[in-house]
Image (cartoon, rainbow over all chains, first blue to last red; front, side, top):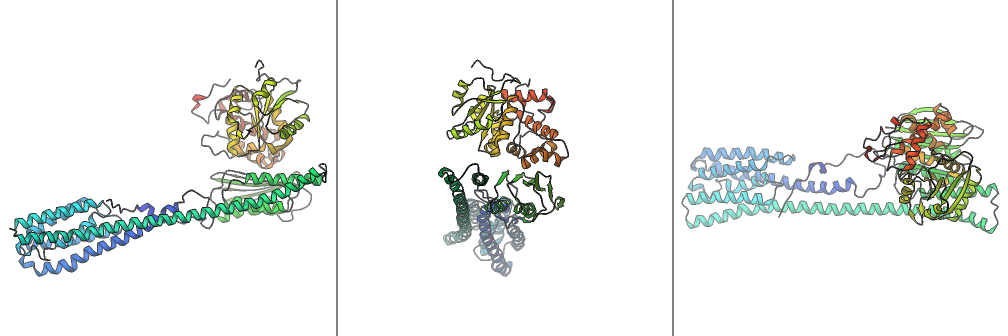
Length: 402
Length: 237
C-alpha cells in the first residue's frame, strides 16, 4: 500500500484572486481553481493528521516517559545515557514536529538512523530490571517519532523502522538473559508498539486520499454544471437571435417573393441590408467565447440594430482579461457614438495580448453629435480615445495598450 | 493545357476571369458585378475547378469560392497556385485563420463575400497584373495574425492595415496618418508582399514578389529578414 501524503505545496496555496475576478472568464476544460480545490481539501485534512501525530508523540514522551524515567533513574545501568537520550529525542522530536507542521520536514532517513541509534543505546543502558518498565521509554515513545520522521513516505518505510526497533529489542531481551516469560512479554510489547503508529499512519493517508477524491468529484461536478449553464445560456441567446433574424429576413424575402415589395424601393433595400447584416453577425457570433468586452459591444450593437441600424461587428483575436474599468473606457465612448449613428455602422475589435483597439465608423452627416463625446483626442489613463469627422465618415476609436 | 496562365496580361485585351462556385445565384451575382467593368470578361463558370479551367484555359484570374460542396478547397487552391494560377479566394468564411491559410496556400488575394462589387473588381484587376490588393477583411486578419512565425511588419504598415480595416476608406486613413493615399496603399501592399514568404512556396507568390520589386514597392533584401529557416523557400527571381 502506498501512502503518499505529501500534498504538493504549490497546489495547496489558493491562487490569488485576479483583479478581474468579478468577470466570467473564458471557459476552459478544467479551470485551475477546479484543480486546486481537491488539493486544498487534501492539504487541510493532512494537516489535521500531522497535528495529531505530533501531539501524540510529544505528549507521550513528556507526560508518560519522563516521569517514569525520572522515578527509575537510580535503577538504570547507565542513567546518564537513558536521560541524555530522552533529552536528545525530546529536542529532535520537537524540531521535527515543528518542521513537519510548517511543511518542510527534516530529512527522513538521517532522522530515522539517529532514532535507531538512540533505540539501541537506551536498550543497552536500561539494564535488566527496567527492560520492560515504562522507564525504558523507547518502547512506548519511539514508534511515534518514527511516524513523524517518515511522514509522507511509503508505509513500508515505517514498517522497516519498527521491525528494526523490534530486532534491537529482541537482541537486548536475549542479551539480558531472557526467560520464556520475557519472550512472551516481548511479543506483546512489539505488537503494541507496531499496531498504533501503523494504524494512525495508514488511517491518515486513507482519509487524505478520500478527501482529495471527494473534493475532486465535487469540483468536477460544479465545473460541469457551470459549463452546462453557460452552454445553455449561449444556446438560448443564439436561438433568440435566430428567431429575430429569421423573422426579419423571412418577412422581407416573403414580401419580395409575393411581389408586395419592390426591389428598387430604397426602403426595401434598407430592410434587406438590415436583414443581411443581422445574418452576418449571427454567423460571426457562433464562437461562444464569453468574453466580457465583446459581450458588452454586442449588446450595444444589438440595441442599435433593433432601432433599425445595419451594423457590422467584426472581431479579430480574443481580448486578454481586462479590468472592468478598462473595458468601460474602451466601450463606453463608442456606444455613445453608436446611439447617434444613422445609415450604417462598422464596429471592429482587434485584440492582441498587449493591445486592444475598438473602432466605430459611421457615415458623417450635418449637425453636432447628439450623444457621443466631441471630436478630439485624449488619453484616459491607459486607454487612448480618438474621434474625428472628415465629412465622409465619423470615426471613433479607443485603444488600450499594456 | 497549352496556355500559359502566368502570361502577362496585355493592356488592351480584357482580363479573362473564371468563376468557381457551387451556388448558381452567387455566380450570377459576381458575373453581374464584373460585367460593369469593361476591362474584365468572364470566360467560364461552374462548380468544379478542373472543368472550369478546361473550358477556359486562358483565364488570367480564377475567382474561387473556398467552400465547395461542403468542404474547404484549400488543397485545390494550393495546387492551382503552385501551377501559377492567380486565384482570388472569395468566401463567407472570414475568420482570420481561414484567410491567412488561403494566403499561405498561394491565393493572390482573399475577398470576403460581403465586401461588395468595388473590392471585387479592384481585387481581380490587381491580381491579373500580379499586384497585391488587400480588402479590409484581409487587412484585419493580417494585423491580428497571432502566429509566432508571422511576417514582421513595421509600425507604419501595421497602423495602415489596422486603420484600413477599421474605416474601409484609404482617404480617411491618409488623413488620420497625415500621409498621402498613395503612401497608405504602399504600406498596405508592402505588408501583403511580406506575406509572400509565409507558407509553402507557390509560383503566384514569386510573381507577386517579382512585380513588387519591379514596381519599387520593396527591395529584395527587405523580404526574408523575418524568416531565418528559408530552406524550403525557392529562390526568388
